[in-house]
View 1 (tube, rainbow, N blue to C red):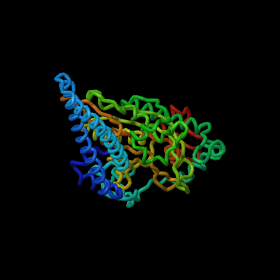
View 2: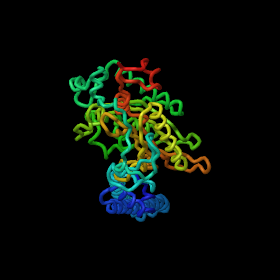
View 3: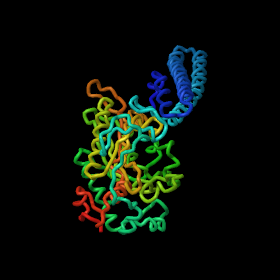
View 4: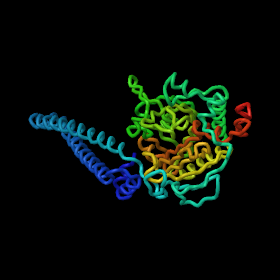
Length: 438
């Protein structure tokens, strides 16, 4: 969540940032936060003064009794009792104000960096790089027309999956429901090959692998910002009050909740493979067919914890890592800088990677790589101790998909279909144990 220091000292900047994200009633929300904080600070001042006065009277009681001034001592005792009642009232008022402030701040999104473009919808995102042609920064997605041409890549992946017996969507419906596919034979081998390839590449890039739980508690959901913003999109185990994770970002980043890290140990770099679960309520139609949008899917996530001074460098390194994966998989891709209105609730800046599906004649998002600045760290109380002066500061948190598997599998199948079968990218062949699906 946004820090009170930022809100109170740079109020206009925060309001403009929220307006860039098209957050409704930005000014009112920030003014409300300032009002609650003012009440909290005033109550704290009153409480401190009351406690101080109570200590003064308490110190007098013993002295008065020794001096035989019983009446005065009793008066002091009565005053102490009265101050205790006032203290209890003020403590309750302070607690309520703190809870109200935290709850309100949870409803306010992060503000975008200045480099984030203006815009409200996906068509306003900027294409900053593409494997297809040189492009100039500033090309809007809505104006993008260049796409690859492969006359053989005309069959969509859901038909290929059935033809080659790779994925059974109907069987998934039988076992669980729509959006829970069953991978079979070489389809399962391709899935496992991608998982191992992505993890190996992350390890080579210096990421320490984590195998976290796939269910988390409420505190973890609040820590990374899925709660309360995305509560309706998460599967909730109500009896135990646990949530199935929508991404490994949640458990991995929460490793550093309530932790103070030495600056010399930063950046911390973790990766994790997990199953991910998303309700995706309201998702229907041809654009979510097959692997395009699932309720359960596999994903490798990379997470960094860094200093504010180095986090931009970390972000660029993460972008280069994801781009390198797509290059090795020989997939046509483009990189987008998301506009304010298309950014997530928690991100300060986000880049999406999309791969092109010739068979579907459209671009499919396969990764989002985000810098959250101090927004998540403030929720998590994830801090570091500066080497120079030992001061405690909030960290920056970053994460990205490297990569999400469903649409990668879809585009590998679609873009590599030939008259002989489906060609496996060269880099995956040692992992798969075969070079063609026939």
